Image (tube, rainbow, N blue to C red):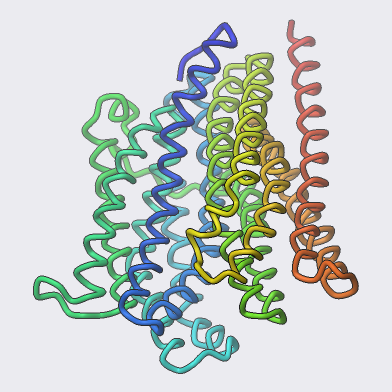
Length: 454
């Protein structure tokens, strides 16, 4: 990261951060996709077991790892303020906290996983594969959370290309180990879907060691001496990390879990409707990687400028990012509208499912426009370390407005299954308006602070 003067320079720097983040997000998405699809080639039972295990793991990971995202604005602000000596201390404390969170997840899984799976009324063989898949995955939870902290540290320095290369290396590695362990190739045991869990755990360890090697050996990271000293645990620093991280984690959890809840509520409709819903939602989730990546880039850029007390520059980055997201959303919306038939055909050849998927994809257009405003604003607010607003917005927009409104439409109007999508769109739109108002308020407050200092 470096100071920029013109909007052209800011756009160039933001894009420099953004593109590697986007590729990283797509690669992570592809890893989960590979686990599910490769398990499906083993058997339908393996596919179902891994899909269930993955649907339980993803909201837990995204929510709890969201807590550790607090290190990104903290390091970015230290960097902007040139408090370089505070960076290794903050990163090490975040690593300690990551290990504790990982052990808590493993402990909770040991106690409650059986009970959760039993409540889902699955077939015995599907339940066993889901259980064994998650147990296998658990061997990689500690390195995964450590890597997540190191990734946030590297990204906060603006070196997003480094984490992009690590993730791009991890994707073929994950596919290779899936091939060996799911299908029992080259003398390895044939484990079916459970093998995907072990393959992912091995990949997590490789990512962690790669990141540790990078920050130890490469000068641009080694100069911060992150691994040169074991600091004592600081509960005060943990409190700061949690103060910023818990609202981020809960906001992400509310966002990811709402879609799981809608999928469960969709079970009352026909198999055709559920299949169409899942297909359209899967593609909409893929497109969401764009505003999500812009959000991450804004957290880094805005945090850097706020740390340097350049509040005007932070404001310019905020609206530059929102503008990029809106322009991209217009293009993706046009793509969805004109090519919804071709997109639907990727997922199914059954005519009834295809036609219904095309209808759901029309509603996905409105997701694009709301996400293009809400997601970048969330990232900008995190750069200011104003995280409670995003937590409140996620809770209200999804669970107070979106889900109840969607339920009423689905149950008591002719909208039926589309009612849930309309409800989510309404919630997203309300959240976007609230977050925009909050961003303008925060920017005015920082402007007053700068005026008083001047």
